[in-house]
Image (cartoon, rainbow, N blue to C red; front, side, top):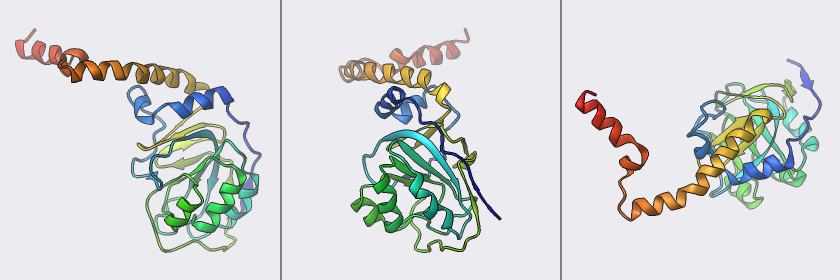
Length: 223
């Protein structure tokens, strides 16, 4: 296996990313199906929400050589997405890697595999989404890997330059050209939710408001 290193992607529009920071992945999930990574990939730290431009890395199971090398290229506004190529045993990110990534200004990291040193990740305040903890770490074996190529993360295809949104519910990846319409729709829905919740708290029936009760009654009556 050799090394493939491609150019850094253009970063997504700043105004779009600002909108993405205010939207919840679960709200977009009312409208969109594609781009959600496996729900088991969750944030190490509580109450974190990030958005940014995907920078991708395909990293073979036991080897973190390329990860150590490419950290120098990360920029503020980037989200590093790491495809572990099926490995669920070796932690490629711990305290040392976390502090190095944090120093670049990178928004956060999405790892399709485990990490380690959770207290240090919290100490350095690096938002990390992963598949939990592992005590077995990667080494510098010089096997290879690929940087800024299309990858798979939790079943979602991620291209360099995609928009990444990650929060307390999970991780969503969207092509930059598709993201704005879904994000705008979700922000409108979020803005309307407090008033709707107040009505339900005051006694309005959820099934009446959503139309679910009408559907049930129509089917029961055979109409």
